[in-house]
Amino acid sequence: MFRLINHLITPGERRVEALRQWPSAALGRGVDIDIYLPPDYGRTKYRRYPLVLFNDGQDLPRADFDTVLRALDRGRLAPYFIAVGVYCSADRIREYGTAHRPDYKGRGDRAGVYREFIIRELLPHLREHYRLSERREDTVIAGFSLGGLSAIDIAWAHPEIFGGAGVFSGSFWWRHSPVDPADPDGGRIFHELLLDTPPRPCDQRFWFQCGTLDEAEDRNNNGVIDAIDDTLHLIEILRQRGYGDDRVRYYEVASGEHNPETWGHAMPDFFRWMM
Image (cartoon, rainbow, N blue to C red; front, side):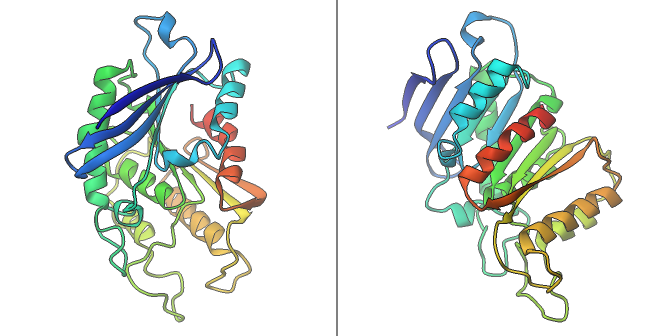
């Protein structure tokens, strides 16, 4: 049964509305969602706020999200915004990925359904019930690991809706064929998608983070771990397409690992740059 739970991060600061088992016809299940409202949300009637939507919202507490938001708000390091964390399900490996094709193991086969949920169900609900800015520049989607791949895939497919995407330790190794030793960097689905997309305005913004200890794999034996290599190759493609420094940012965390604690460490940079 769908439930709405309200609680405060700190009295007089942000309020969190927790939607539990919010029904999705597209996904055929209930979805847990946390909505972090700005400190002045209840004191204003007409102000509209930017939206930052997170995949893997269940990881935000481990990323110490409350502390991140409190520091941003108190220091006025970014404009007030509404953050929304969408929890993943047991079908995460199927619902996250690239919507136009699954990987070579069939994973991500429900990514198109998940995109439909975000675009056709969740965003309209949020716009109806919360005072969100209608400007695409103020609408951002982000995620962690495979959720980061999902976030940028959704943003890239809908530039009319999303002004940007944030990718924390993105799973850009996602591929349509097994690694070929003769071409170890071939077959990466999202890299090929960027290359194959017809020319269009370069007006979205993309923020990427990697940790130097994200993993240990080095598929092409060039001395750079795959997580960093795949991300830098993707950024190179964006550069070739015309995205400049004002549109692409890379943030590397020394000794950063593939976990919410590292992603929380990187979040202030994400919000300051993206917002």
